[in-house]
Amino acid sequence: MTFFMAHISTERIAALRQWMKENRFKAFVVPTADPHGSEYIAAHWKCREWLTGFDGSAGTAVVTEDEALLWTDSRYWLQAKEQLDGSEIRLMRDGDEGVPSVEHWLREHFRGNSYFFVGKDEGLVPKEANEGIPHFDDIDHLPPSCDKDPFETIWHDRPALPDAPVRLQPLEYAGCSIAEKMKMTEEWLGQYAGSCSLIVSDLAEIAWMLNLRGSDIDFNSVFYAYLLISFPEKTATLCIDEKKVPAEVREYLSANGISMAPYDSLPEASHKVAKKYVLVCKGLTKNLYSKVYSDIRKTYIIDSPLQHFKALKNPTEQQGFRRAMERDGVAMVRMLRWLEENPRQTELSVAQKLESLRAEGENYCGASFETISAYGAHAAIVHYEPTAESNIPLQPNGLLLLDSGGQYLDGTTDITRTIALGPLCDEEKLIYTLVLKGHIALSMAHFPKGTPGIALDALARKDMWSEGYDYGHGTGHGVGSNLCVHEGPQQIRKNLNAPSQYAFEPGMTITDEPGIYVEGKYGVRIENMLLCHADEETPFGNFCSFEVLTLCPIDARPIVLSMLTAEERDWLNTYHSHVRSRLLPLLSDAADKEWLENATKPI
Image (cartoon, rainbow, N blue to C red; front, top):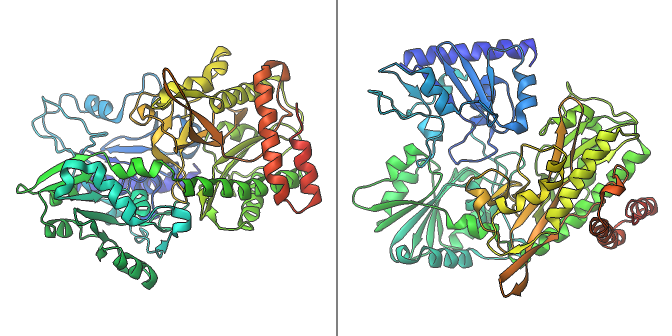
């Protein structure tokens, strides 16, 4: 963080402390959140970023009368260290040994106090969550949150709520109509569906259910809204800013039994629907839940069935992913050849070139996340994004880590390649090969249907663990179909949490992205997207395997060939043969074809 940003952060923290004093709060928790539990959020809700200057996508700030702290996970430790430099904010390396959680820190900090207030905006806190707020048996009075948003007062030029227009996702890409999705949901709800309403607040689930897309959040094809579905009628109310809905979409919604109401009218819309049961999908905020809840109806918080349905890609969506990967692969090949022939580039110029090549492809809607173009030591910062200030020129040595993706009408892509720009040291070659071995091991997985991600994670880490290396991020996440590049509920990671325990089923997408990062030196990550398939039935059950969706050569130059088994060599050669056969017919430039032929030669 520059001196200027540190000074700005100090002023903003002081403004929050003054607000806390006026409202009798001894501490205030500022999460990275919007009212819908989104991972990425619109500028209007980037309160933690505005307050601290740290712009990573995950983190929680805590401000007391005399301290300011920021918790973030291992993906962002290096980035946060740089961006908080010079400020009063202390970095708490969430998940590191000996670092207390937000809740534990608050408990210890205020131990011995018999009366104090900790604030957290109820408009951002899910009803079922209690993250970051301690509950003590020995404290006389400790409100867990509040109904006030301090940033409405202290953030004077706060961005307005987004109002981008909503658009249709045609059936030729969605593959399943609203009526079919309503029927699946009704069957899932079983006993309740005779007379119930279902409240959905997750933006991706709403977009998926209605076959609509938007652009209220950068890189994510979603729009801010709430959805209230009534059964057995299978009609619904979409709570949305109606100026965002074009006439074509209004007609489409009406034809499918969907009415509209203002964005902030969910409680009123809910009470108008006289149902025996109100089923609230997890994620609805505390303040909205308290307004929706009624003693005369039975209200339950449930896991959203839409999340599960959305994760199981139908045949149309699966084929859409394959088509999108072909166009994405063409752009990647053209960029890699261009970089080889024009090596005097910078981190930013590489990212910009790739974006321009993707934009030439059919059905392209924009990037699926901010491109990570990281050279040398920058690649050790897991989620580094080059800026005008941090941008550095590439040199004819070392590694460039390029993690990028595109949103297409028929699919979403996420790919990482680590590229040798010239001579490498022994450790760079070692970690590259270890990451590749882990990547291949997961790609080749053969496992019983219902296996959770945590059981698959060690496949990607086994060889690097044997050499004393590891990485702090997850190994794989689901990917939406022209929706969010990070999609649940399935994940592959070593941490014991709900997503890592979710059972894999045919139709689920997942990324395969192990990595190794040596602080201050270099980083390696190799990532493809996979599709879970039914494989075979044995006396021990139904087994699954993965289809590799991503189509792009993996750089063979850094590989220590003696470290690969015969099976691993066969996998890489087979993959490259597949990439070559799929992409060669789509390349029009003879030089691009020649480059691809060379990049996919057998090792």
